[in-house]
Image: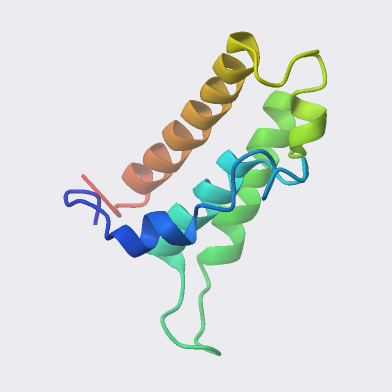
Amino acid sequence: MLDQPFEPKLVKIASGFPVGIGKSGCLCGALSGGVMALGLAYGREKPGEDMPDSFPNNAALHDHIIDKYGSTCCRVLTMEFDDFNSQERAEHCYDITGEVAAWVIENFIENGVIK
């Protein structure tokens, strides 16, 4: 799954996530991307299919981010930065993105999705 490049359509479909979904400042784009990544492993391919591992794993990621950062809202996560375009704010968001990516990969390893 992760040993090959992603199709351009996957990148394209995620393009609205940055800055809290379309610059709205709401749901953190890194968390949204993590949910997509979890969907690759635990999601369904057809509407109505059972997906017993999807909700618990996605909820666990959500709860991890809440526990670590106190919110999943971009506006809240970045409120300490006066200039949204600052390098400091960007680095903060990179940290959150890295935290999400690490959590997802650890989840995949623990659950045998990847080795």
